[in-house]
Image 1 (cartoon, rainbow, N blue to C red):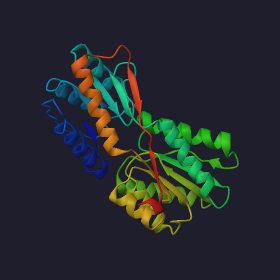
Image 2: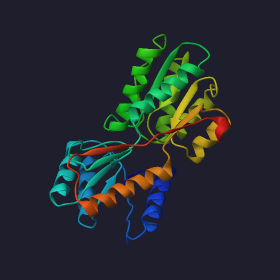
Image 3: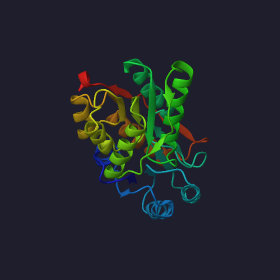
Length: 274
C-alpha cells in the first residue's frame, strides 16, 4: 500500500516491487499494489484491514498515527506481518522497517549545504507532514548537524508542505520573500516539483543550495540545470529486493522475536553523476 499514485516515485516503486515478486525463485508469489493518500488515517487503517484479509504479508508507506497502529496490531493478531517502508509507523507492533536511516539522510543534506553554500546564512527544511516519522527524523538530523558542525548557519522554522504542487510553490515563494538571504533549502519529503518551480521563478535557482529526496524525472531535470545541488536517493533495486525478502521470510518462518529494521545505504546524486 503506497502513497500518492500521482507521484512518479511511488509508481516506479510499485512496479519495482511487482517485478521483484515475479522474479522470485522457488516461490509462486503474487503481488498487489495499491495507492492511498496519507491525509486520512481512518481511511488508511480501513484499507490496511481490507488488504490484510487478502494477503499473507503487507508493506506500506504511510504516516504514524494511533488508528494505523491499531490496524497493524489487529493484523498482527491475525498472523499478517506488516512492514513499514521508507517512513516508520507502528513501532514495536509492525514486523520491521525497511528504508533509509532518515536521520543520517537529514545530516547528509545539511552537510552538503554547509559545504556548498558560498557563505553562512539561513537554511530551511520543508517536510510533507508532521505525522511522517521519516520526515521528522530527517528534520532532527538536519538540525542536529548544523547545531553540532555548522552553528554559524541559522535554521529557520520548518515549513510543512501539504503536497499539492501549487501550494508548495506558493509556500516556497513566501519563504524566499521572508528570508531573501536564504542560503540553503532541504526538501525533506517527496514531491519537490512546486519547490523547484518556485526557485526558478524567484530567480534564485543555483544560488540557494537546494537538496531533494529521490531521483525522479523532475528532480533529475533540476539537477541537470543545477536548480538542485544534490538528491538523496534510495537504491531502488536493493530496496525492493530487501522488502520482498523480508516479507517472504516472515511468511515462511513466522514473526521475528523482536521488531526489526533494515537500513539501506543511500546515494547522494549530484549534477555530474546523472
